[in-house]
Length: 109
Image 1 (tube, rainbow, N blue to C red):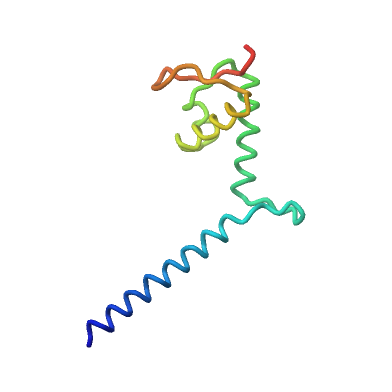
Image 2 (image 1 turned 90 degrees about the horizontal axis):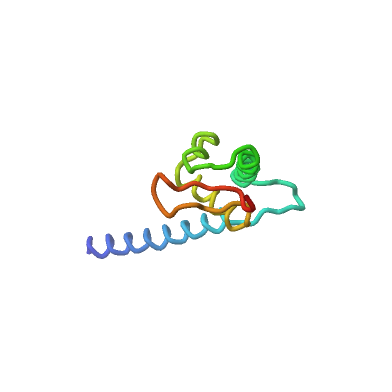
């Protein structure tokens, strides 16, 4: 009898955890409402950092991932995502494939 109660409690815990986990993800991914004028802090920070990167590329011929990391105070992965986004926008291009010899330059140089 004790085993049955433990099994039922375990199943109830799994179901409740799954429900609450999905509920949180849905709330977190709610879109930005321009009508309210409230921009999420992470979106605002990303927009500001991308603008700083555009200024950096205006001042320099070459920029490496490590430069972005140190100038913006972000992680390696975040700097890579930012650089990839500017590359997809057609503002910069990657020179080199992998390693420490990779750098980015403005398109049209």
